[in-house]
Amino acid sequence: MEMLLTTTDVKTDYEVLGIVRGSRVKAVHLGKDIRAFLKGIVGGDVSDYSKLMEDTRENAVNDMVKEAEKLGANAIIGIRFSSSQIASGSSEIMVYGTAIKI
Image (cartoon, rainbow, N blue to C red; front, side):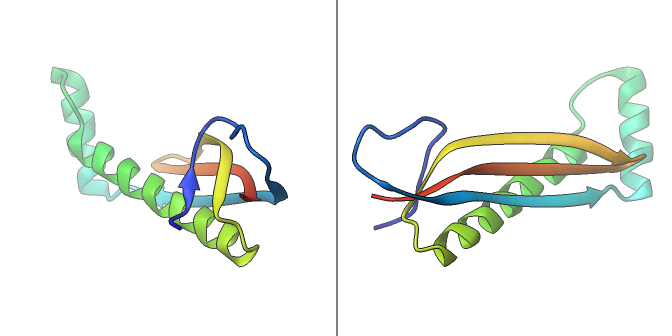
């Protein structure tokens, strides 16, 4: 069975194995930062940042899944995402949930 990932609780019997999390901090390249600044002046999507954050979220989820697999889980419920700015040009994406075995 593939790992089940959900933001809600599952309505079935399951064994709670513990909280699992994944976190990644990424810094943007100076050239991309300058392009984003210029994009901010004229408006529009900042695709460099969008792609960076998409990749960072995916890596954080993969880290969380690996942690859950180590516990013997086949599902993670109650998944939540959080982000914060660590320093100028650096952001953290954190994902966490409850590892369970259905």
